Structure formats: structure tokens, C-alpha cells
Length: 163
Length: 120
Ligand SMILES: [Zn+2]
Image (cartoon, rainbow over all chains, first blue to last red; front, top):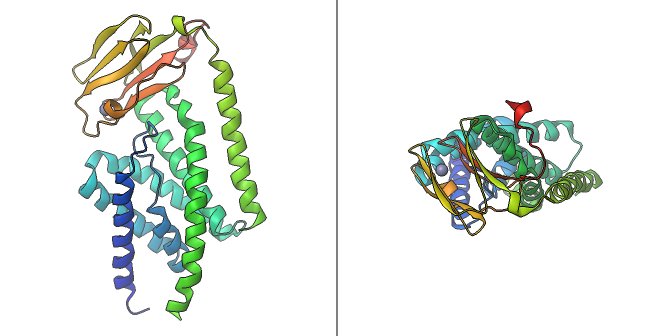
């Protein structure tokens, strides 16, 4: 595809907008970096449309840019842990082809939250943090489900544009 | 959606609900015996009864306030301020985490003997 870079720019912009929208929704899971994961919508679409390499690049670029623009350097490191684990799990499951987009997205949402929790536990060296696991699992399933259904719809429509 | 997607979602939700049930049962201790345990960098900094109102300076980075049977992080010098915005905690197992300063404030039941000796 000729305008690959242009598409990447558009997807990055979309992911950043979703990151910002997410900041406006005041949900605090008690774990730094654990969020709704709306930007994952763009990551899932790119994963299915362009493959895991571009999804990985987009994921890292999004986290670093969103970190500089909306939060701070510190949160970038924690977001990267969840983001990379989530994308790793999604890439693997997509390749294994057991689930549809929705199942892959659910696994991504859950593993993102689990990744953040593990980092938090490692940093504070206190297992009590694990108390939040059930809430994070439920949140991961619900947001993963929502994002998966939206991604499936977008992927179906995008196919016509690509021709 | 495939059938396997529903199994995945259902399986994770069942695990989460089972864990919640376990937490609810483990929570049965007498709240008047709960203590607020503060850990810094994995080491226990101090523990304070939940029933006595007090203000605790945790090093020079955080300040914990216990009043009316709940604990809140009143002040912190961390960049994200997640701990300060965290809602108050009072139930056994709940905690407030300040990741940048590696501070954890958690509520623990005073009734059952704790595992502290084993994890050290
Ligand atoms: Zn803090």
C-alpha cells in the first residue's frame, strides 16, 4: 500500500484522541495505569488489518505520546508493561485462530489489566495489591467485549475502503 | 462472535466472582480489630488501629489520615496523585497504593493471625 505512512498517522491520531477521551471519564481502579483501554480499539483494528508489527509500533508510539501529552513520564513505563503484554497475548491468539476478534479483544483487555497489576505488585513488593484482581478481571472482560464488538464492525466496513 | 469467545468471557468472569466470594468470606473479621498497615518499599513501616483517629507522616513523601474508621491518603508528593484521589479504605483487604513512592496502605483484619512472619 502506497499511503501506509498516512494511514499510520491517522490511526495514531485516533488512538491519541481515544486516550484523551478516556482521561475525561473518571474511573479509578486503584491501580496506576489501569484504564478502560478505549485506545485499544484502534490497536485491535490495526492488528487485524495490518498485522502485529504495525500494531506493536502504534501501541508504543501511542503510549509514549499520550504519556508526554496528558500524563507524565512515570506512567509511560507502567502503561508500556500492560500494553505490550496485551498486544503479545492478542497477537498469539489471533495467530492461533481459536477466537473471533471479540475473544481476542477480551483476552487483550484482561491481560492489559493483569500486566499493570503485576508491575504494581513488583514495584511496591506487597502482595496485598492483588486484592484488586477480581475488579480488574471484570473490567477487562467488559471493556474487551465492547471494544471487540466495535472492532468487528469497523473491520467489516473498512474492507470496502481498501478495495 | 464465536462460541469460544463466550466461553473465554464466561470463564474469566467465573474466576473473578469466585475470587470476590473468597474475599467476602475472608472479610468476616471484626472491623473494630482491623489495623491499617503501612509498607514502604516492601518493608513494614508501621501499623495503626483503624478505630483511633490519627495522622501519620510516612517518611517525607506521604501523609495518611485515619478518622471515623476509614483511612485516606491526605497528601503525597508523587507526580500522578493517584493515591490522593483514591477513595477512602475501611474494609479488610482494601489498599491505597502510591506506586512512585512505593508506599502501600492496606487494611488488615486484626482478628486472624497474620502471615507476616512467613513472608518476611
Ligand atoms: Zn501517590
